[in-house]
Length: 209
Image (cartoon, rainbow, N blue to C red; front, side):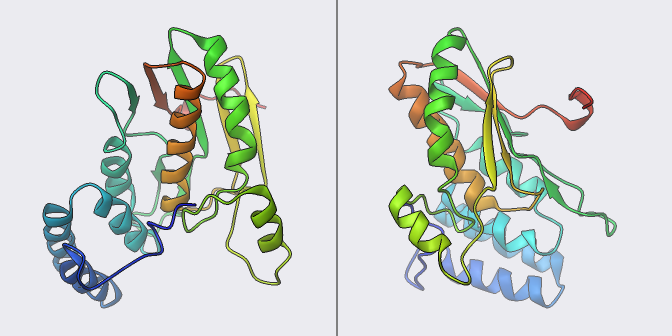
């Protein structure tokens, strides 16, 4: 289970700057928020990038932070992640903000990549908006509750690319995206894929239905 998204403590490095940044966001003092968030990341390191992205997600300013957070998941010489993976678009000038829920894999062994994506599919359905990955049993218990955090409605593997796509209705869920990237990377390693590049195709490059 991934509880990184949900845990917080005033004693964590960068926490004070992060909380002040969140207050600045709520007050619409966005330049100040950016400065404070940069301070938080400088002290706390890459994990803070995901929290800052989440903090901006309700204000339509998450796209640039998402690119930085995603890139921080790269393992040089191993499984790398393109900054545009699970990209957030829009959000500026009152434009609608959406997220592209596709993870494509470029590797020298597409057969094993497909095996990995197929293994990842049921796991991704049990990843929730707060970043937790639950067992199927625990997820089903949560789904039975009247109010539960969001998880994908559907997921499917397309072996032609290869890729896996998730039906999340375009919603913006940075912590969910983080865990999904880690799940796919984990399954690639289990399948014996040591080098691969995870990316999301731009929407203008997708075939029409």
